[in-house]
Length: 113
Image (tube, rainbow, N blue to C red):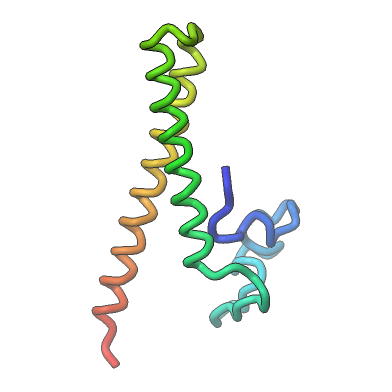
């Protein structure tokens, strides 16, 4: 599974997980402030587009596997089911991310300036 927000790669695999050793704030974030973008790192748009491409690729692989099974070019039903489930899970995660993003935009709209 990829790490679209960069939480896993930033932790270095330590026991603290997403949160620092104290468990109070995510690594790289001060306790009460915003994170500064890393220079030269990919933008959110680039990461999102890459993940959309990956989901599309998984969908195409699943469709190709189903078509090959129907045409008799392959006979491993398990492989076809696995490809279909991978594509389904990736799509569900993408839809979930979209919902969370829409929810965040609505919260931002509600902020009083």
